[in-house]
Length: 158
Image 1 (cartoon, rainbow, N blue to C red):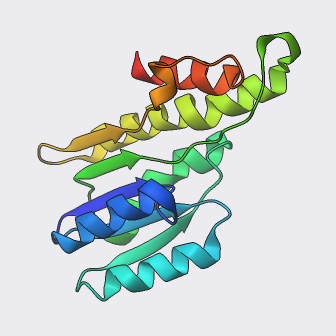
Image 2 (cartoon, rainbow, N blue to C red; image 1 turned 90 degrees about the horizontal axis):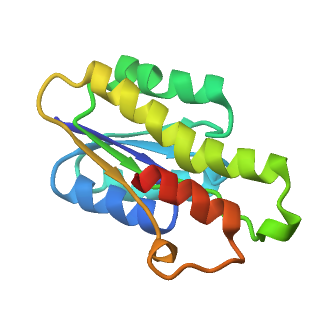
């Protein structure tokens, strides 16, 4: 079976992507950070569709955890054919009160983790694969109240 990794797959859009891909025959590597109960529920729904689903907990703000995610998944489930970077962190801030720690945290989860996951995905993929990076409409309708989040998503788009 082909396998897809969906970061932030327990809730919202990530969950919808996971359920859709499962319904088309993909085994699912479901990443979550804090949403353990939701991840378990989503995994049970996925399994009723006749495909495999394994849960992978990782803090995408931790470079070491990010570096282990794809190798852990491939060891457990085989090579990945799809990577959907759906997980994100979203903090309200403006330039005038920007804290370096907030900017670093936003960039780690919303930019650095997806880039590192894309790199790891590319190293293990054995046939043509697909990477989807979720962005945000805020890139087209800029607002100053989510400065570091928007900056991190704009960098990912670039």
